[in-house]
Amino acid sequence: MIQDLNSKQPLVSDIKLTWHAVLKKLNKEYGNEIYNSWLKNLKVKTLENETLVFSVPSKFIRDWITAHYVDKIIFYIEEESPEIKRVKIIVDAMLANDHDAMNSEIFIEKNRKSKEVSYTHQSDDWPLDERFTFEKFVVGHPNELAYASAKRMAQPEKFDFNPLFIYGGVGLGKTHLMHSIAWEIKNHNENAKVLYLSAERFMFQFIKSLRQKDTMSFKQKFRSVDVLIIDDIQFMMGKSSTQEEFFHTFNSLLDLNKKVIISSDRAPSDLDSFDDRIKSRLSWGLVADILPANFELRHEILKKKALELSLKYENKITIAEDVIIFLAKTIANNVRELEGALNKVVTFANLMNRKVDVELAQTVLKDLLRSSNRRITIDEIQSKVASYFNIKVDDIMSAKRIRSFARPRQIAMYLSKKLTSRSLPEIGRKFGGRDHTTVIHAVKKVDQLKSESNKFDEDINVLTQIITSS
Ligand code: ADP
Ligand code: MG
Image 1 (cartoon, rainbow, N blue to C red):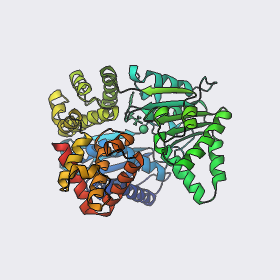
Image 2: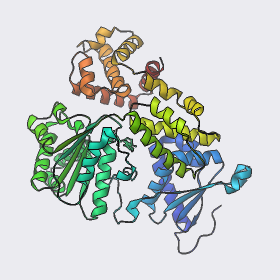
Image 3: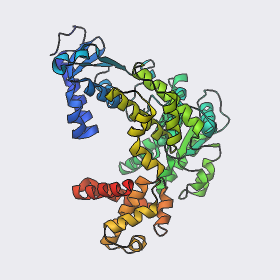
Image 4: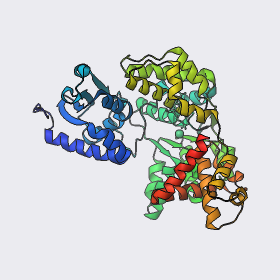
């Protein structure tokens, strides 16, 4: 099946090794089920110039892989073999028995800026998504201020405020804006030292440096950057030594006139467990919020994404205006869900070879609509968990520590975090005025138990079903 390769190119055996390594990573990332049903079908056929060609046995498999896994496939291939720039998947007519298989090939190329300039992204120091750029961000009233200030912060000249603090609910574009700042600064000046990381990673690295008794190099690393971007600072709550270290880093960068950009799911003054002086220092510069997208913005975002999708499908798919309006009206929670819904509809239409119309959208989104129309409440979760375990709701709320109450209580907290948009402190309050750290602990514990025991994992899945399907 492997064809002869041009001598300038890597040897077949090299490609096979590359692909073997990539498959291993994909398997690890997606698990056995997806690996066996989809990824395993990809057979390396040949390398043409810089394009690695695969064959698969059917159009269906090709489209599904293209819609769901191809970005990751390219990403890992590039990690292993940077000389490979593109991937092509063809349907093997021999295997397919399919008349139009001969001309059904799709080209996938990642249009990445990082290729033109010379930095690469090793997942650790440049963990940025190339889709998250200013060009791809749709501006509307709810995010206008955040966008304008992010844009300003990314300009090379002097800045009028520092730090920039962006806050807003889940899926509203905070991370997108922060990545955009990093990309743009790098575009202006390739040598700028831009460090983007989540607060969790910051904590992790700090704790590691403490353990290795090497806080000096930690300090040096963070204090030598030109721009520091920290995402989701709310996760730094309740860890006082990390907060302290963060505060020092933060202060010294501000003193050196280095740009600092921070995001959070809430305003600085609502970062409950942060020290007052940190809270006030965080709001020294500009504080910009992102509000939930209104209909107009949702409409604009969908129009843009629809255009991108139809390009991706080489104009074989058109998404009519009434479908866009239907989605913009129906899905009001956050932009991530909006995007997900559109993708789901288009993938389905493509696989089933159907037109994208409102009827199809309604069918595909039935599940999603149910969950976004009906807001699950914490009260509901508490009562369903109690009845599942045959205990009283009062016992869930109480301070009793025996296992038969404590475990359901933790599960109810966990499900409240997963199935509602309530914040950790709000959940704590709803459980008899507990602290948010108790909720964090519960979430961690349940995650751990889920991974240790199939039976426990199943309990959680069944409960989730019960709660979301009623
Ligand atoms: P957050 O960090 O606030 O939870 P993200 O930045 O991860 O949210 O955004 C969630 C998804 O929605 C991303 O895919 C992002 O590209 C998209 N998104 C959010 N806001 C916009 C916008 N205004 N324009 C285009 N895409 C957006
Ligand atoms: Mg985010």
